[in-house]
Length: 125
Image (cartoon, rainbow, N blue to C red; front, side):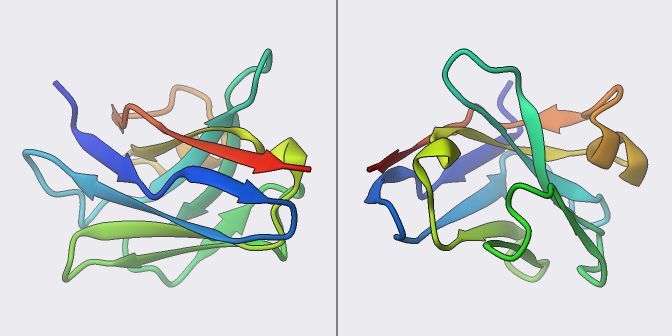
């Protein structure tokens, strides 16, 4: 049963921007830390960004720091990932995830309580 649904992926040129959205299906995750992960071609899934339940704190992988921004609107029950200055190496399937434990998201250890099915992001050179 899908619990999170991502949208907003697509094809963009190098230097372009995309905004991904993640909406829960069937339940709310307003009080959960949330995160974004990605899996590029031939690569393992990796952590991208995380946000606490209140939105007060965020954490990013070094590879996206300064280019990506994670936010959430709990009134709309939605988490966003704004991706600027996209590079070909950002090409991947992007997954939204929720976990009740913050460190499980940022370390990926034992993560996560819920996952989405992913949305494809392709950056052309």
